[in-house]
Length: 295
Image 1 (cartoon, rainbow, N blue to C red):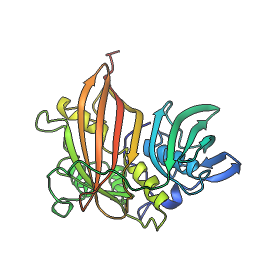
Image 2: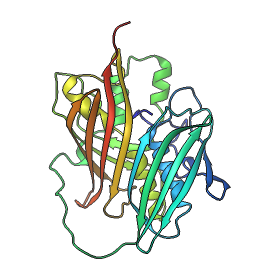
Image 3: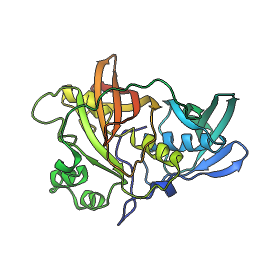
């Protein structure tokens, strides 16, 4: 699965609440589709989000507090995905679910998630790191369009379509230019289209967006990017912990750092803060990073 930008519909931003919806085909079986049926790979965040949504379809009222998942095979956007939910446990305090995503008779992804009721207790959190406010930064989509102004017409038409997730950062689109950079980055992001009042959908769409711009943080010291010749990259696994409710139609800061790249892999950590400084979620991901040997 790729950490590339998610596909979109022509003319307006994709409505993720509708895009991610699932069809129940049996008690614990669900079917989802991709918004873009062109050949390629499914955006990894889509499968995270739809797997979490499938788990939620079997959970009465509790909210997810953590999920852990593996990307196993590239997803095929031209065919539906079948999600099989295993109701592992319904306990007094926690509910546990496992979800397997299948295409062409094979697993492409699996997820384990745990759910609980809110409770009062001990509290502390890391402070939001300093950096530019979202109002001081340009929309990444506009930055990319400027960088690609001499691109072929087909690419320009693709860039004319608004992204479902609005993102703003200082250099997310130019991190490979002007020499090696530290393996840290910050992005402000939010969902462009209304999510509604269901806190589960805010979590689901936050999980969707959590797969964006992570691996690029591990690439920063090495001056490589997605289109670098012979460079191979893909998300391998992904973990997320939800600390507080999110209202993802509002701006959130996504702060990344990559403490290690070795053995063809890069590790990235992320912290997601609401605009008021509340730590909403933490993320960790390992991704494939390698240069293919010359043929």
